[in-house]
Length: 50
Image (tube, rainbow, N blue to C red; front, side, top):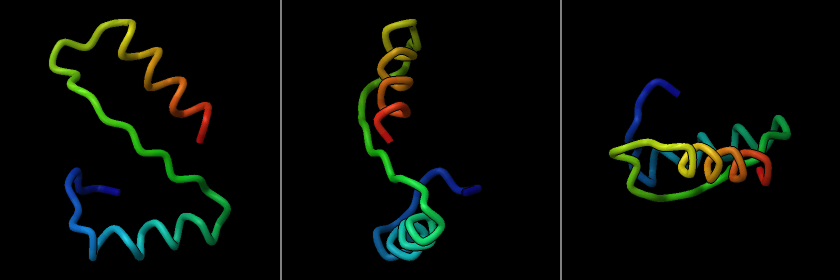
């Protein structure tokens, strides 16, 4: 994935391709303008769940 922003139409085939090779899709949100250890732990937990 080289782009950072995708439309839904672009995202659907990308997600399907990842699922076909056994990869998980994890979605999270937040405001990370000043990244701190709490944000890092939150993102690590999301990665662990996916």
